[in-house]
Length: 606
Image (cartoon, rainbow, N blue to C red):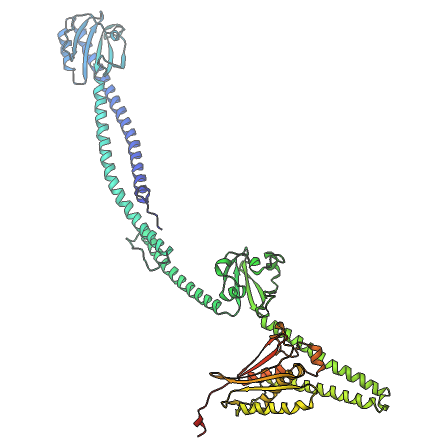
């Protein structure tokens, strides 16, 4: 929010006050010098004038006194002629200190009386200021009157002049000067405010423009007044505003582009400042780490990645090695999450490290694939080693002479042939899976009556029951409606055979195997249920993995390769269907096959 500036705090007021103070100080200094000079000049001129007048009067009176002793009237006339407005009193005394002539503003008749002024008693030259009984300043001048030879004093002249009047004139001039100064000051105040306004108005325009720029509005322009330096500054400010707007648009465009890139990246990205605090994190990183943007911004990257016990931020900057973070849930395999983190320093041209960027890759699938590859190689090696070891043992026995034994030799050869057949079946299954993985296996679909197709396969198993030691019963619960499905008969026969063989193997003697065929809105579902031991819940999600066996010893003893269900899953997948299992330990298992189905009307064949 913009704070309002009071008038007394504004630059306009400060400029006016500063100018007025300078003006007043200047006037005071000039006035002081002027009045002092005027006073000195006026008083000195007054002193000089009075000295000249008294000297001239003394000379005139001396001549009169020298001509005759009875010239009082002439002396009085001289006194009255020299009595001007500046003079308050004139006295002339003879050598006996008797007043010969006198004149004052009070018209006192003092002629012939004895002089009572002490200033005249000594008949010496004197020029001094004094204060009369009314408290006014006067100037007293005493001039001795000598005879022409200069040897004797024949009298004295006393003049008391009005010095107060001169000071009054000086004060009147001072009042006029200061009055004029005040009028000039008032006029200057008005002119100052106008001038300061002309200076501050462009500055105010630029201030308002700066406020708009600070608020993100770059469309405003400062008004230009005249062609002075402030106008040039205003033009420069407008150009700056335009450039900032262009730069902001460019930065905003780049920021949007960067945000778009970060948002749509399949990898997580985290950027920190030079202290390791998170300043940027994209949605993928938030999703991988299971956090929100509000709680991560400002958090240490070491805390965010939960590596503060093993690493320091300085070590990350120095080593910038890749890390593997296991964020898996140990209780649920579906929550497995493995993240690979690559670090890269943010370095300026000067070499200053301003932060670090961490790129998070979800390598869960790669790790799972790598783990499956390792397990696959291990399982293949184990599955091939067992029959090869058995064959080697029997062949060594035969080579050591057992071939001569008519009872042992045929048995040893039969076992060797069985193990060889087992390896051939395993290799054939592996080749089939490899072809399916590489997309080289084609599905030859035909329109098949799935009811009759399944019944045909189950009839074959019914015929085989008499030739096996284990007895079982096959129950059929099929829909009465014929279900026509596009399927590859050979490959679907292989799938059903695999599931039926497993059901027979793991069912108890005399158990029942229930086969159901139903239809849904857009699928047919065929299921096979047995009454065997069932599959533990922890193994249920992996029964379709390659070489995975719930009971390894029992399955290997029964000659299984561990690839039947994996092949079945790939075949059903090639038919755009799905296969899954449900089981409860001690109560048996049920395998489901769902295939796409589109119902046909009865007149479709017509």
